[in-house]
Image 1 (cartoon, rainbow, N blue to C red):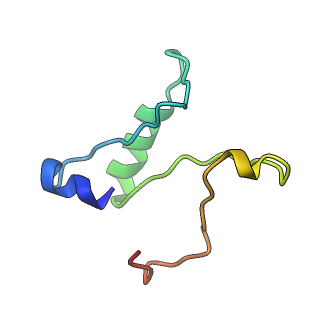
Image 2: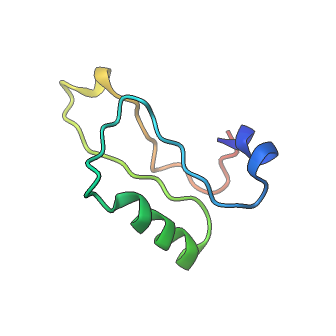
Length: 70
C-alpha cells in the first residue's frame, strides 16, 4: 500500500482485492472511511477464519505495533 502514496499523496484510498465479493448493500467501505476521518491513520477490515482455512487466506499480525515499518 505504501506504493500508492506516489499516486494518491495524502488522499484517502481503498485497496480492494479481486477475490473479495461485497454486496452492494454493504456499507463497510463507507464506514471504514468514516473511521479513518475520525481517527486518522489506516483502517483494515479483517475476518477471522479457523485454523483449517488459514491456508486459503492472507494473514494479519495485529500484535505488531506502530514501530513496525515493514
